[in-house]
Image (tube, rainbow, N blue to C red; front, side):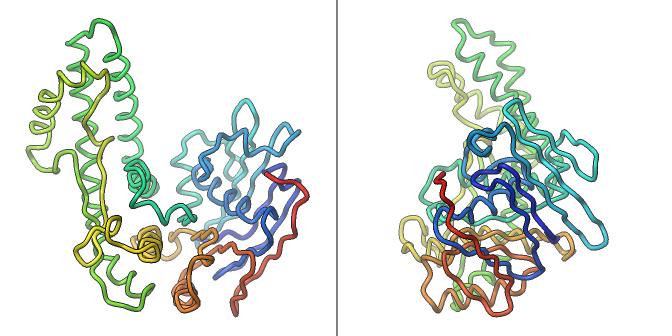
Length: 354
């Protein structure tokens, strides 16, 4: 998958910006406030119609403007797609090859982005939600059925939690919601367990390439209930045991929405025993690992690395650059970075601060 160009209008600090990209490594350099991260934010937005900075769509619109536009031409072998997204206060409109689409799964299939941003270095020490997001985003991009199960599960979870907040809980309705959580939770757990197994097969080789040292790196997935032929019965029993607590605290306390995972480096939890540098490199390895699950090179994601070089020493920078040269297309932001053979895009300091 290759992004040939990018067009921005009223997006963040970009009034009108038009850029051309090449296969291989594209380096976006410039001082702070020049809009480097805004460019890779736009690339990511074209993938899932959501900012990785955790802001609402309206915050992406340039100040004193009514709308923003993000557009790109993306190729996947001989298949060409033009993606255009209009962002306004009333909502957004996504158009692919002139046809309006409403399902985000259609957008994810058209533009797949793997992102590493500075805060990812702390993902193993952060909240479980960040780690679940890693699973959910990557699985949703690969398997539309997973996204469908997640959407159904989250709707039922919302309804169950609302019911638990009632003064008098309808037990029949509560049981019905619980049955649906079990029904939709089973395939979610199954997808996650298989995904973790596939990623673990990749991580050791990936870590060696990034660190130059042979280390055992493994995701330790902590499922709500291990997936098996007895999943539905065991999950139902678990919800029964948690019933009194759920009613007392007015929230669903267990389920796939509370699952988590940790990373073991040479058998030790990296969040507890790993150095800051180890956490950063392992997080980078994890975020890049789904790239290698795509056997068809033409379908492999675009890789976006925001400010990844600033905390790495020269040796690790050189090792990372050598590794990234194997990827179909990579975008790197930096204040100052020269990579031989890469495409360099230089931005100038903006007068506006966002």
